Image (cartoon, rainbow, N blue to C red; front, side, top):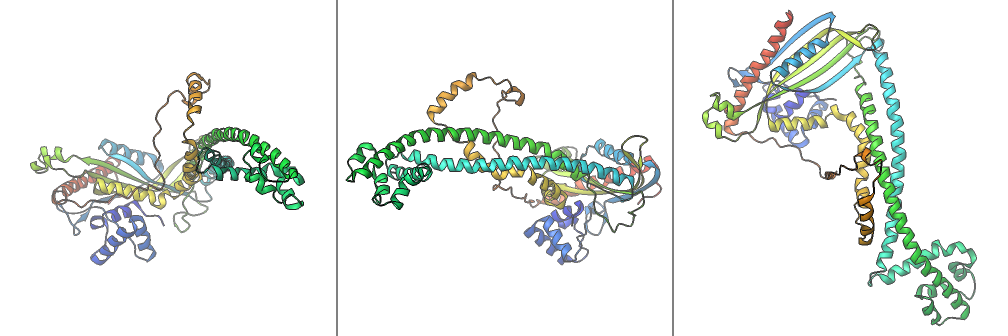
Length: 513
């Protein structure tokens, strides 16, 4: 179920835009649902229980907003199979811009009949986009697996390096040394087979004390003083010397490997971001070329050459309370009054039923047919508009887009905390001093290609746990409710009719309401 724009507006301000008839209990129930679940979820819940969420534009009784008045809504129908539909859309779009509205497209859906050439043409284009997107997603998965493996390796290296760090701490030195000795016996000495410390201690008579003696001995001199038989002592001395040599060399190699893998991780993460950036346009294009399923739509016959288009535009124009008070349209005292920003809003919905026709030898189509256009007026404040925008992002209108985000950027975001833990580590002072001189004079010839010389501070990314709370629509003051909104409502009532009337007269419409 996809909530319509007008339904979401009704959920954000049920008092004005929810058509509950004369049953106020429906209004109370709907308001409570919206408060508990949010606008979009409340609409879904109502629809699932069999109650249709009917919306309405502004309803005016004279100069006042009243449920017993006339809705601010106008409709017109234009039917011409010989003339294209694009001029209708662009005429209204340009007209809204001329009236000072900031116009945003909220809905853009289409459905072609399966037997039409348009269906086959767009199906081929969608397939190409899907194939290219799938190929890039495969590359993303390959790099992502590499990033995961690097993260797990770096985590293991970090645990090992912590043991070397603990050797410098008097409190943890003994425990760290024992852990490293155990590691050396399991990973290095174990490769000697039957002559390893553990193999001799557990499998040969006379060497039962070998493991304990090795763990106890600090160095060769200390091993010589341990009360052991000579045969065991000779083995312990040689193995302690080997271990101490390994201890120094392994730390150097491990820190070097850790640093190299951190650099490689950064490289792989950058590759992942690049692949994600490349994949997004193809995935988005494939999604935009998808058709809505309308199997029960009577206008859509399988073998006919038919297309249905649905478009919704929302135009917003702000009202400056101070300027209106100076002009005398509002009380003069309102010049100093702090209020919310209010907006004239017009919702224009297009429903086209057209006949796709190829434009000559060009690879695109033009559409002639029947257009049903409705103009609805709303008076909304800044909080309501913000909330509507938030609800639209959560609605089914953005579901596919969220899948695209999940397939690309979200993969990185889920790992970002782990990645940052390695990328943001501070280097040792000795490493800093040695690398700082190199960084001053290093001049990579490819660095400028990637903007390496334009060092700008990176913006701190918001944590995924820091979810933004939904905008709370503030309660209107007396002045806002009794003066400002009714004034805005009268403005949009006139503007909505003017938009409708100009287009009707410009095209000599005979069929309109």
